[in-house]
Length: 116
Length: 114
Image 1 (cartoon, rainbow over the protein chains, first blue to last red):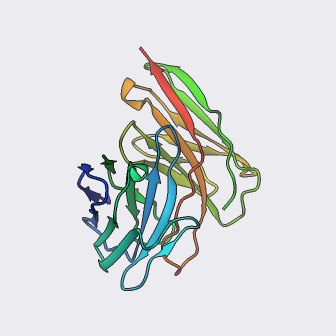
Image 2 (image 1 turned 45 degrees about the horizontal axis):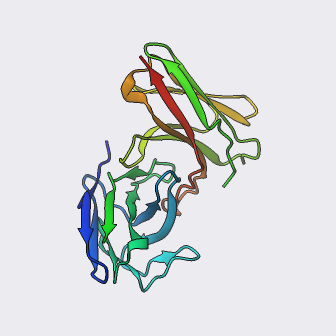
Image 3 (image 1 turned 60 degrees about the vertical axis):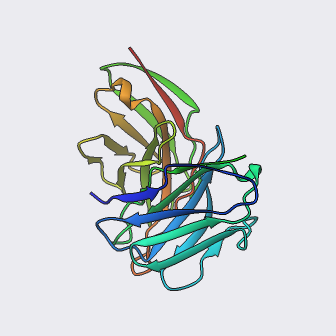
């Protein structure tokens, strides 16, 4: 079945630094990937849609200059949290699907970001 | 996408069938019903999806009512590893338009009890 790999699984960084999270589709090509964020005891919230070869589209309230998304190939999207602050500590999850269009989205195993 | 309603929590005895209900009374004709689950501190795992016919795979069965306003996910023999939050999501599938994002509600927290 379709596999989405996310790396790293866990990262701790100091306030003010930047962190890059990678999301790869291992056995299919994904023109679109999605980035979600999940705070403790809450559901997943969509942050942005990553489109291969074009700019990402961000959900309302998500700062595009803070959460930089690069989707440079059909199998890789990256999310960079710039100038991280403690309130950015969260569980970040990516997802992607192949075709046809009713194919299920498959999710990575998430990245636990802790900003100290 | 249509809104779904699920009970916040359910218990199920190990080895018994777990039946998780979902209401989606405003579902449109071109919307699929998807089920995912999330085990603590992991990404959501796809379980099953369907349009109007009942579906079965190695993980579960999906029963969709004839009017499509509700569905039930059935785990035939629940194990302790099935303890998770289960999400029922409806999503439009539009041919040629690429993949669409999923909107997660609060889901049902299923606890499988020894």
